[in-house]
Length: 169
Figure 1 (spheres, rainbow, N blue to C red):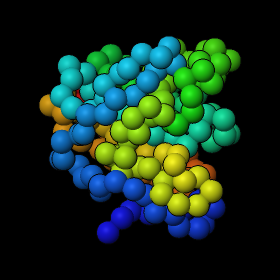
Figure 2: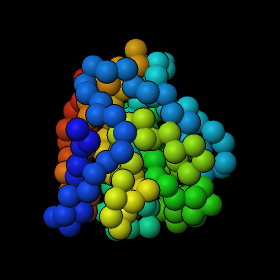
Figure 3: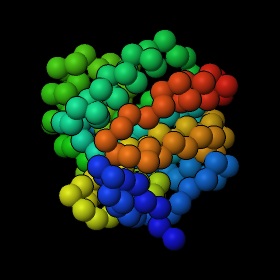
Figure 4: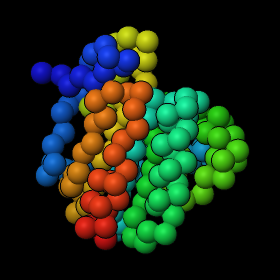
């Protein structure tokens, strides 16, 4: 059965598999604000934090990205990627406007690979965008933590994310 989240209290279905802690993190290709492809998921030499948001042009996504940029600033051995469907050109303007330098901002516009994570919104006003979620992937490429935010208009639990990252680095 497909997972659902809420948009202003109304359920929306997500497209893709339901991933669990302990599963292998699917490898996905996203495009950075500088139009370079970046592989996320899979086995890497760093702990990965993969954050999905609907659009950087919304207040909650803007706040969330700025907060992760701040709280991940001093962490060593961690690669943080915020993924949306926004085009890289808009993402670049966003990063320049808010001095985003500690996380990679990337787009799933080219391959739509984030469906592999089960976070593609399949219906309603945000159909085709990504749900708000956080995946932490250990160095072996296994999912160590998942936070699928139940209400798209709300921020994730930052403390849970930071605590899990600190356990793994």
